[in-house]
Each structure stands twice: as structure tokens, then as C-alpha cells.
Length: 74
Image (cartoon, rainbow, N blue to C red; front, side, top):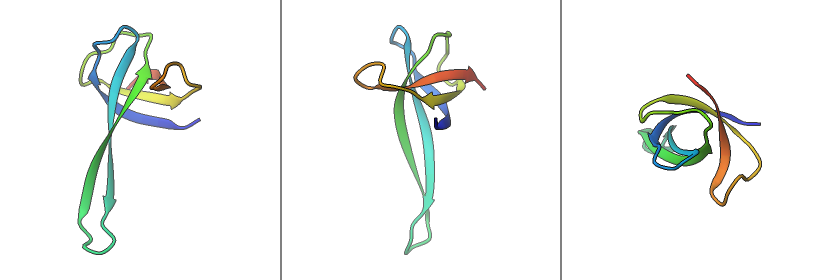
């Protein structure tokens, strides 16, 4: 199981939150640090507010776009 730390950006669904993680990498030629955001949907049993840092893990598909589950609030 893969563990990811991300930030909650939307909590408008009933038991699902949208989290965003930032990926950084260096360009191979120009050596500039590039930032990319990835948004994931995660199942959450606890109440979370926008801006909370959470730890999510991979799980079996729970819905069409939900493949992660919130483990804890960091």
C-alpha cells in the first residue's frame, strides 16, 4: 500500500474529499524545478475542512474515481 500526504481542497461530497499533492522534479535539460499538482479523490469517514493535511493510502476501487482512503489527519 502506498502512503501519500496531501492537502484537502474540496469536501462538498458526503464521504469523499478531493486532495491535492504537489510533485516537484527537475527539468533534465534546463535544470529548472517544475511543480505539478495532482488531485485525487479519497474516501473519508471523519469530518475534514479545506486546508487540512491528511495521510491517504491506496485501496481497492470504492467508486468510479475513488481509489484512496483517508487514514488520519496530520
